[in-house]
Length: 88
Image (cartoon, rainbow, N blue to C red; front, side, top):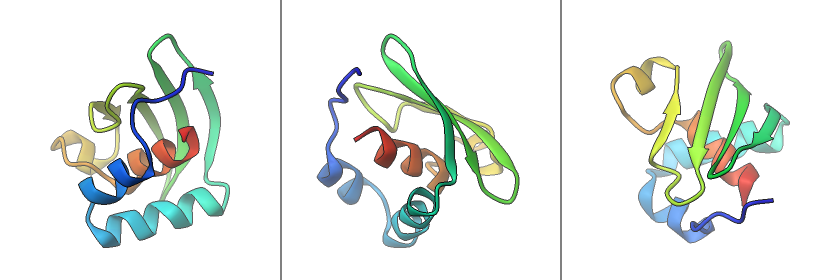
């Protein structure tokens, strides 16, 4: 597995508390599925109100791609953070 360059503290200090709490809930409830490892990234389906495609870079999890409404505005969301938690 490609070890990420980020750690839990990186996620905690770059995310607001409500987003982090919702992401932890998604992660702990098994909502991060079909995780695949790429060369410098990880991708998954994260189940929110519907399934969302998410990928995170191993260097910087906030340089990611996701297809929820926040992702369309390039705003970090609970789906990305949940996958980042899974990766670490």
